[in-house]
Image (cartoon, rainbow, N blue to C red):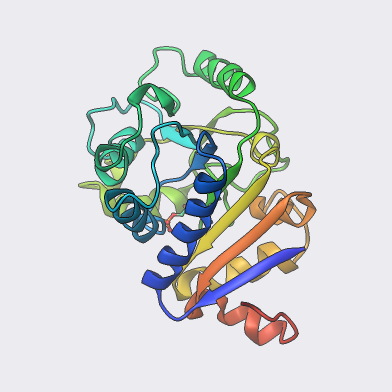
Length: 253
Ligand code: PGA
């Protein structure tokens, strides 16, 4: 069963998502948390930083593992996800740097890095809560529309639509890396709980398609319909609009 939470604004969606994360950390101070990048979780990260700064939560014993990283970008590249995580979260909280994990995008052997990342995931064990965003094409992490659902961490070729969408962060479209290392969908589904965060009108149709449409690797997020753990979907009103229109019986919190 999917639990829907629909909030008035993008900012409130971030605050609500942070409350859910904070609850996990309070219940389990040494939680293993799966993190994501992108514009969507920025409000959530800001709220987690605030909660940590007032002592409501501590990341002292928390371990984090990120979904993906661009191939070829070094950690000090401003568009690397490593940089993103430090800028928006890690540098502002009391987390131990050695407890934060992302794939090494600048690895000379990205295929081997995928294997290494899976070994790390095996060592770390089950993720307590995995944060996910959703791409306009239905991707989760960088698992792009494909003919199958990748099980393990893989080297992926980014789709044109993803390169286009992410080019807003780079000087030009040509600067967007064409490949990424992405946690596989099989790995993502091993998490004990999943928090899917989606905001803005641009995500309304794909969110409905993913959660109510045909389960197909051409819409990678549609696999979440088979997820056995606890799936909470936090949205703002705009992102929830197509679900509201097509599925009036869905009653969000
Ligand atoms: P966004 O990306 O938050 O920047 O929209 C989400 C995603 O691609 O998963």
